[in-house]
Length: 102
Image (cartoon, rainbow, N blue to C red):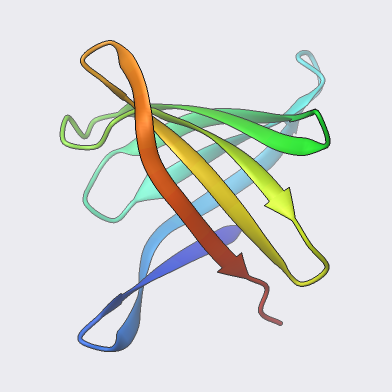
């Protein structure tokens, strides 16, 4: 299980929770990404060019685009570069640093 947090009024708040699992038929990690504003993402991930690639189709939240991302990891952090599907085209959605917590 993974959790993502944002910040509102200088206080952290949880924005999503993600459940990962192994799909033995597809031989890859897949996940369900529960979104705080409603809906969820159905996604999968694989290693591409020494980075983790993720592809997610968002269901039940028309205001939240489907997305794909590339994750670059260091020893204690990672940066995720995200593109969103808007009007049938992939557009830059930003880069987001994550820091591991115990």
